[in-house]
Amino acid sequence: MKSYRKELWFNIPNRRGFKNITPDVEVALRESGIQEGLTLVSAMHITASVFINDDESGLHQDYDKWLEKLAPHEPVNQYRHNATGEDNADAHMKRQIMGREVVVAITEGRLDFGPWEQIFYGEFDGRRRKRVLIKIIGE
Amino acid sequence: MKSYRKELWFNIPNRRGFKNITPDVEVALRESGIQEGLTLVSAMHITASVFINDDESGLHQDYDKWLEKLAPHEPVNQYRHNATGEDNADAHMKRQIMGREVVVAITEGRLDFGPWEQIFYGEFDGRRRKRVLIKIIGE
Amino acid sequence: MKSYRKELWFNIPNRRGFKNITPDVEVALRESGIQEGLTLVSAMHITASVFINDDESGLHQDYDKWLEKLAPHEPVNQYRHNATGEDNADAHMKRQIMGREVVVAITEGRLDFGPWEQIFYGEFDGRRRKRVLIKIIGE
Image 1 (cartoon, rainbow over the protein chains, first blue to last red):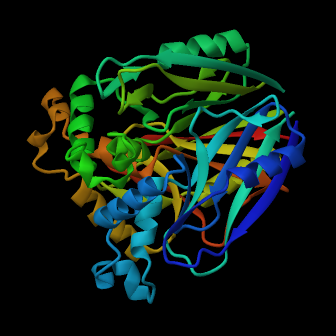
Image 2: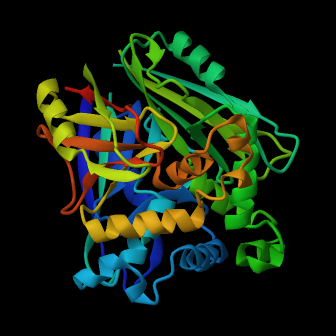
């Protein structure tokens, strides 16, 4: 069994944003030399997500509005977590809806995807450097 | 390390529906010959889910009503994604709540499940052929 | 490829509660002797979650209040599932938002975590013995 590890670093300029990281995962997969196996792609921070969906900007605006409705940022004092001096309790909730991680099959050296699957980094408390972990195992 | 790949195809006759695919995953596991490892079961389409829960029809009706409340289908013009000509923005949201994939342990050649765990395909934009991917790795 | 399996048992004294199980997973990882690979940590019951987030009690209170808002326990007769004699339909929904499982990378014999990542068992229908499965594969 072979394994390969790589970190991706991001600094999303706004509080919230989505970034297509599929090309970065494909580069890591080529570097790994692994042909058959699984790759984990996970947010290393607990106010961010990694998820798979569509690369369509209207949908991303819909997600942002929808997540704000389900877990509003303001008023910040509605959350006990923010009494610690943080203002990001809502980001911890948005991340649970969108998910921490994805596991993707690797077949014949490629991400084994359906027609529209793309991997995104979802930031809910940005404006600072944060990381995603790629771990690939297989042969 | 061995690996095994199989696709399952579905055509759910309504916009939304749930289908127990545990028997299909068990067949794939037997075909693989793998005794110890992990299996990924993932929706290859971004308006569908694979999740693990209870095979109880009342609960499935509750899920459908609940997901409609959290991410209503109508009015379709409340979503920017639908300005592209689609009417399925809500399906992209419902899928995020229910999840894209499950990873199941394989122990002594069986799905290593608790007493009520069953694997479901969750369709949120049906009436067309769509796929689930099974990828098993182990020994 | 090596694999290792362990069950953790809990009896949360209230209907809902969160428990940090990171130390238990670290013990299992040491027992496994695996240096590079993946670990699956999953709830074996369908009214409970395993998720990764912050070990901060204010946040856990926020989660509890937020999940109650998205999927209220009462009135219990709002859910068809509860017509079976259960009163836990809400727990099946809360578990979908928080997730069934996490997959964590193992690197140099350790859980490969970002600075604040901790693994939690989330109970939504407690006051009885329930289980979490740890399955580790790698070398």
